[in-house]
Image (cartoon, rainbow, N blue to C red):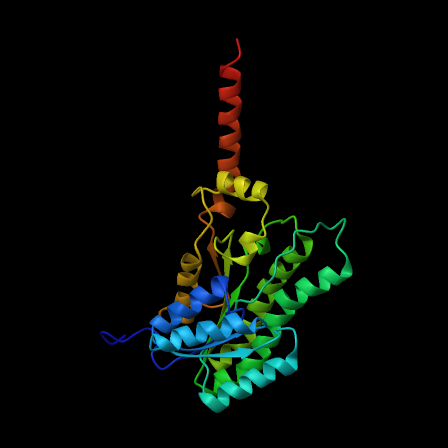
Length: 273
């Protein structure tokens, strides 16, 4: 990398779910690194406002409304990017929704909604952008999954969507290799300052902070750093893999919780006569 050259200079980056939360932070960080950022979302007002804010700071940013579950909507976005930029190098499949409904109570409407956005959306996006990425000399696709795609989760549709996204990631990486397109996934645990975190119950947030090895949720910028790495030329030999951004929750979460419970037990019994 040339000295003083920003990591995404002359690159075009498409981010879904870019109006808020993780997408907003990712967009700002890509723009700071020189990317032309195309924000997409179903939430128009916030997306347009963010694009305007980024342009005011000197970035090349635009907003396009996109329903990730609709193939025609994807085709329109790709057509516009081809018209406006003539190339595309990065897709971040960031749009997603949470569901904490169990297998015993979920209805088919919620099941289809969650899988449509979290799983079908990234598949349609990958399918739609791949030819333009190929024509641009290759690129990188980063799928925002979750630790719910690595372990069990109380929300059955959410877990199914994120486990499925791992499969889409690896299948796409295998198929698109000859087009010089890398495909990887990022797996955060709870992320603060997002809509998903805001919808969590106080009890869930308390339990999460107590059980997490680092005693807190991750910040959106911590997740975004992993996204930018996978999207960059620095990760040129990283493909079809999962980057877990969870403070060690999956790897050491159970031993930590067991230690906490043991300490609680010992303190409670030490106080007994």
